[in-house]
Image 1 (cartoon, rainbow, N blue to C red):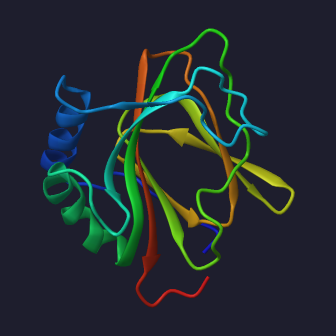
Image 2 (image 1 turned 90 degrees about the horizontal axis):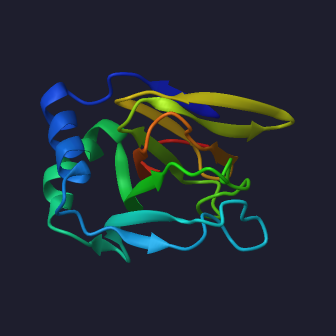
Image 3 (image 1 turned 90 degrees about the vertical axis):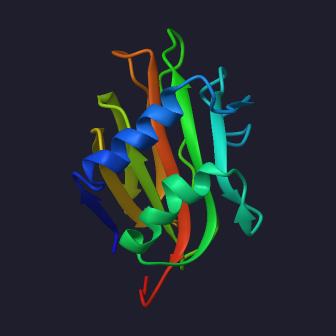
Length: 173
């Protein structure tokens, strides 16, 4: 698999529950000062993240409500990390630098888009740049070793996604 797009990934009730919780006032967002390592960073404003799963264990009680129902759909054998990201609209930030989430050929990165906006996720496969639209309730799956970046939104104030990194059951990359 180089990449796969699944529209209407979650049932409407689960999607709305996750969206309502993350866009509400009780989510403990933490500032990350740069979007990728400092040598490649183009976004000097940073972004906010909220970790569901890290260091081999759930990191927040919402993991059980939001993430566990998704794991079966993703065919997950083992999780590396799951976190939500919140990017605020900015006048001087255009995109982040190309990066990979983890240095592994055997894992998958998934991005669940929670907001519809003009942001793009760009995958660099061989010499091609593939632009993926930021569409509500869309899941983008790709091998973690694929370089990718985000062209940030200019049309809405806040962009929300959930980023999954995991090892799939019975998949050969």
